[in-house]
Length: 369
Image 1: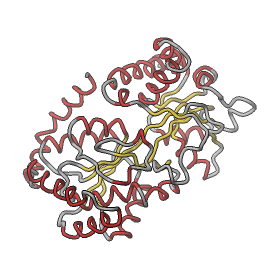
Image 2: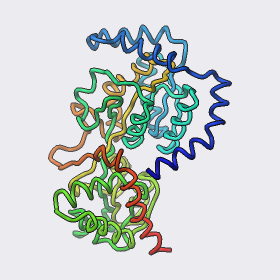
Image 3: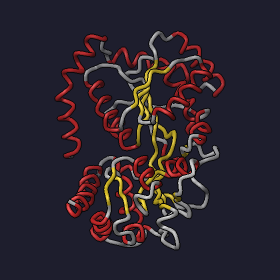
Image 4: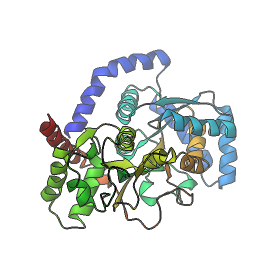
């Protein structure tokens, strides 16, 4: 895979630096890591939820290492969640927050160097898939995945909230029947008024694969051409929050792939933007959490993971994120058709969908250039 080879090249260029850091701070042998995480996991086998919680609290108290959390969740939201965890368990969490690509690269570099930087990681499904394939994550054995959306539960990670891609529009500039009702309208009806996020290969791949080809019977080339044609008249933006902000400000009529929770956050502030009635199907990709195989504070990390899958779910809903726990209010509204980004789009076929989407977005850049 070209994208993966490029990532490996970038890793190698800075790996020596990370190795120096690891040597200075003390590296972690695989035996040490297995003894730590493995021993804690063994302690929990067969325990009911209350006993499990009590045992994790007890084990956390005996861990000298602080727990470190790598995530893409913005500082405002992650701060609220961490404060709630610290209030509940009197355990301070060290936070590293960065973009998905930065978290991915940093974790892989540190792991290759034998340096235990992260105890637990929460990023998007695409990056969690890479961590799983690279053997970075420990098996995740927790009873709290039973109520998590099934497509967000994997052997080494589970979803904590759902990124629901939704077409959205400015109520003022797209009024009087101009709000889209189908994906075909999103991609063909807003010349000059459409904005597209430049990294959303997964949203693109899911719609091409499952909707245009799987449901409507388009050929893959025909479906890709719809997106390419739309991009020639659209503007490309990096960042879903920025896209929603510009849409709310009237810079565009329609945004192709805002996050549902982002639109709701702007609506709560009085911004004139909407995503309902939804253009269906909605596209869902989870943000997941997992335990690093080299975790230095595995009991604290597992306690935090359990917290994120349970007590933190209503908190995430209050922050206008879409909880992954189906029993919590604030999830995807009932009645809408939703498709999940497939494992193949995120994993084995990622190079294909990234390359195709780069071509799509590139067509727009060439046209506007």
